[in-house]
Image (cartoon, rainbow over all chains, first blue to last red; front, side, top):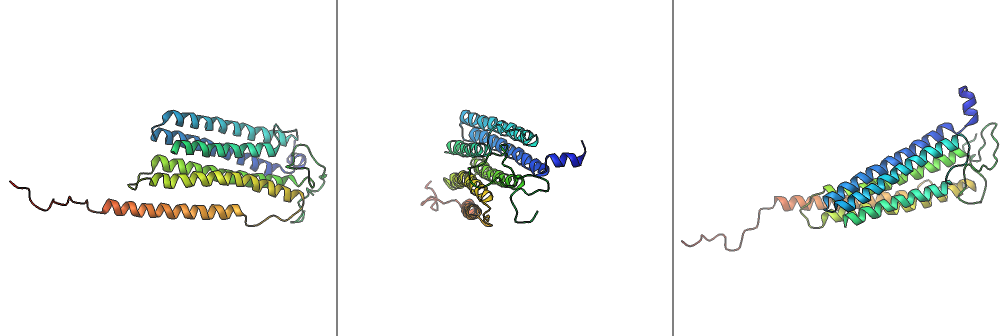
Length: 108
Length: 155
């Protein structure tokens, strides 16, 4: 398929790619936060809660990464996505708030 | 496409409602996907900012060593709380912008979210700087002598 035909099929191709990369970065940020929460837990003397909290955040980071990839693929082929943007965004917000709560619990 | 046209007016592209991009509501019409993606990226960027603040708070709790009692919490807690608030607010902003896009309304140039972040970081930075100065002053102060240490001990 030529580049012209491809861009005619997906006119928002580059914007879609940037959005997929933004989801990727969000997953990486979540993973980094998980690592720091684990370290903070270990330093605070609550290694178990740090490991559990950090492990949950790392798991959620993988879930966000998988969603970002799936959404990119589905939007590129114009098939329906797994979640609507509203559900996905509220889910990511809930994950970020959960990261904050886990960090608060470990710090306190 | 004109700068103000957000209605999916790519040449040769119909502006029909697509089920690929589910809307935050049933109002208005389906905007240009590129504007929706830009709005989504802005939300994701704010969300990463919120996560960075939470991570900074966790890092402060893990690595900050100050002589002032409770200083570690005084730095870590506001960072984590600010990150949590910004995470909530970023979702509200995304929804508001999506509605505005669908209704062809103007988007705010300067949002409350950026003001909140700016003032929050400035305040936390000021508190951290003050704590650092106090810590330096405490560590450089000569150790206090006991009241009767100047008199030699009797033989």
